[in-house]
Length: 71
Image (cartoon, rainbow, N blue to C red; front, side, top):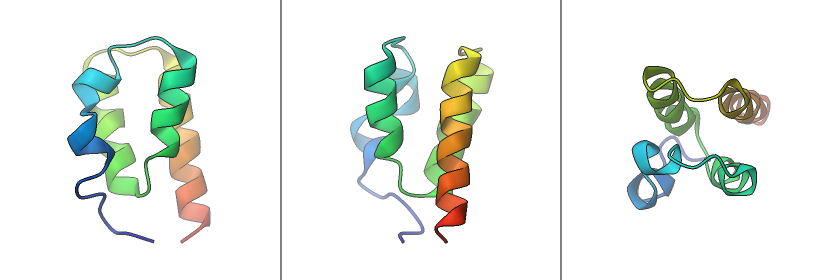
């Protein structure tokens, strides 16, 4: 597993752009593209700062848990 997602989703779809949408399918697809805890954490931080809906933060928490299980 990669320790960082350099050149991955954060570069192509930064948190501020990613979390603008409320479309569940797009957010789920983006979350699946997160391959390390640091990336998920960056999106959670941004989501918390900008009061994103709880369902988005739950998806991110679930992804983080999955990544931790696979370490």
